[in-house]
Image (cartoon, rainbow, N blue to C red; front, top):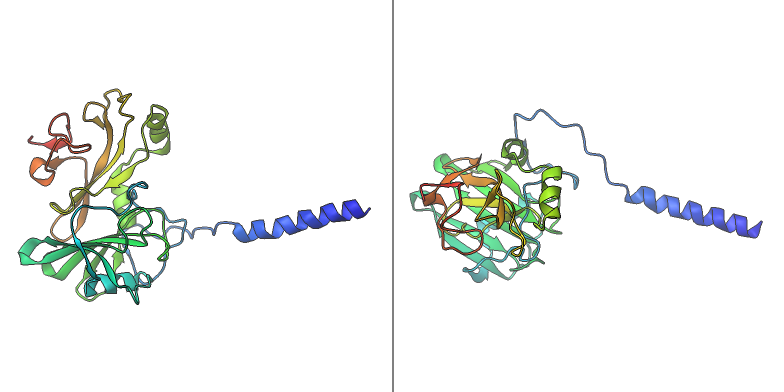
Length: 264
């Protein structure tokens, strides 16, 4: 009997934490037409846009360490990210339309960053933001897109972009990964030059992928689309003109063998 009682006690003690660890149930989806204004928080189960690469995280060549720009501080504050007492962070200033300046900021260059953000100046007082948070708090998996009109609260437009994106589904990604491809990620290597990032996955260099509707660079990568800031809004595109995607024949930037860059 004592051993039976002990087993029952252990079983009950195991049940309670499991209940506490259960993931919260996402609320029923609201009508997709209107983006949701902040500061309402998203749940951890919300799906974001493809994330920065796990290995390199927020790393980007260029920029310098200095005080966090005040506009970036205000945006992060709206997202409940505590940046009080922040000293020098990595800041890259980028010329934008109309003589304005955009910024790309991160508190730590590399995979252990707390926040990464790129701003996009627009017409009519509109500003776009791409943001990825880790423990700042992390309210979603992946990257999120926001738009602000003047001093109005941020609007989260992530869900509408995901609906347009036509990313490879889980089965398609599993098939690529079975052939040696990595995870889908957001390639930000051009964001200091053009307001465009690319969603891609890299293949195993020793076993290039067979040619299909998404492979490029002679089977060395999988294309999942471009995300572009276009004057006052974000848009998803399957292709972009060559002027919006400079090449240098480095990985993911081939000058040949890329059918998704038009005019090269």
